[in-house]
Image (cartoon, rainbow, N blue to C red; front, side, top):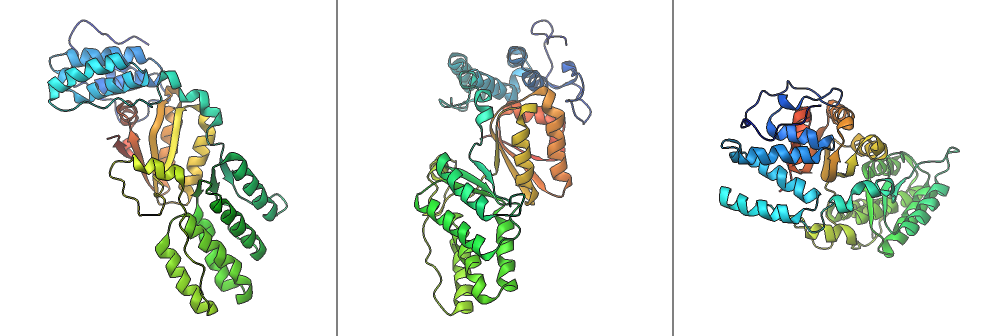
Length: 367
């Protein structure tokens, strides 16, 4: 691959665009792309210095210096490389040029000195998929879940495979969740609506004296998700069905989610309730080694009509993986779902636009 020219003739910000399609399965020719996308592709191929070179040439060019996207991509490159000196120098030039505040340096950003690839094999160790064992036993799996959650200190419970359960299993799961809640253990839930549907179906399919454990489990799930209005509506149904008072609402605060919500722009969570999920968060360098993350994303998307994917902690999408990532997004969209890729930095946003991913997903840049 020829290196991009840094000197010589002034580059034009308006270049022939590549026909809509994917880049991941072919050798890219950087000269066929607009400057921003050219730099994004180089960065994806792990040529950060080459990407910075053409961006610096762009902002010095008489025409290209008005290309604000090139400036913002340079900020992202310096942030990733933890190059504070160049970041600050660029900030002064940006302020003079555009008469507005530059991006803010993030002290805790995942840069080269803290490359997420080092932790990729350890990511999401608190994920637990609850499903019947090979022999159909769920009670034993519930106990494994409780022990696992306590050992990890946090847990994200996937409930996609729990489509039916016995009354004693419902009571056991309600008890396990209640114990973890009282210990203030941070919990998140994937596909909770699958279990909720199974529980509501059991209200009508079982004799009244066998139904109570299903009600109790649903009450517990609503508490853990901060759904007070739904809890109160269910309480009325319970009072009519059993002519007795329902359980009392209890406040559960996921300390980790609450702390994250404090820093979210415009976030106004209801008092005493955890912030709603912002979507499935991808992290690190997305590559062939990210199979577990992609499998979890597909699982997350399976029971949703709108699939939000938080890209804020994605350091880079490896060039050799772009075709596979394109196919993942396309498959979710073609399944009739609305895909939203949020919190994108300029580097990754430009790459996805070069790939044509914006034909299958809404791209939302980081503020």
